[in-house]
Amino acid sequence: MVKALVIISSDDDKALVGFMWATNALKHGWVEDVEVILFGPIERAVAEGDGRFLPWVEKLKESGKLPIACRRLAEMEGFEVSLKKYTRVEYVGKIIADYLEKGYVPMTF
Image (tube, rainbow, N blue to C red; front, top):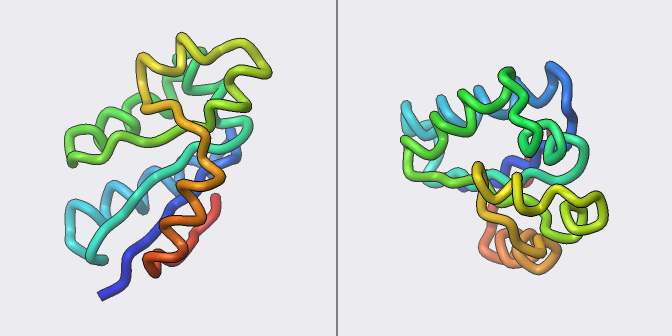
């Protein structure tokens, strides 16, 4: 069965599609595993508490999947502390490479 690496970067409706897909894939068992990485503009939106996205972050947490956000971007833009309220904040370059090595299929939104 396939494992999916959902990388959400957009901070618009495309991000909602990524959150919805990841949440439903976990809920309905569409894939063996789903990991979610926030990488780019979506990080600021989540850090600022954007109401479009926080319910989806919460649904992922309820499914046992805490999204991982890119520490470097958060450090550069000064929202690392607030982002940690909602996600795990890590340097994601190596994490992404490791998931690819393990056969996760990348999906970007």
